Length: 213
Image (cartoon, rainbow, N blue to C red):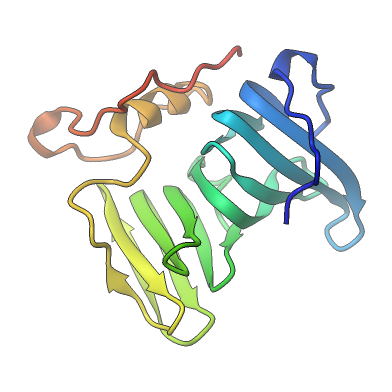
């Protein structure tokens, strides 16, 4: 799935392309044209500290050791993400998230202007999804699905056998409220959530993702 022997280098020395810019972490990007969309395909391999990339007002935090393919349209926005390993926190504007699809080995999520975390849990052979706020329509390749509409962190898993189940965790997995605040700022936005008791509840056990622009 990944690029054998890929060298992960600091984002400052990576050439930026028209659609996706690296604004934090260590990210290796392989770019090629995509005849199907009229845009480009980007194969991303992420280093040990994670990485942050941006396409206009779309912002993505990718977990360490994540492997993913991003596809852009000719307008420079990401339209599809294929997640092969790891996890990605995707932050979209109300319009720039409409119609985006995120795919794993067994599931598809159709984004509707939201902030959503997707992870492929290889050991459990399942997809984990948390809709942090907004909406996402989920379908399982083995049958079944669910639409999530929430103002604050609703999480599910999609097992390899089909269907959708409640996530077996008591807090968001590998993404946090302070991450979301910091990353939304990179797109000139504030989170569109309704915080229980009016304050942040989930804090990263590490510094929030470092970004340069």
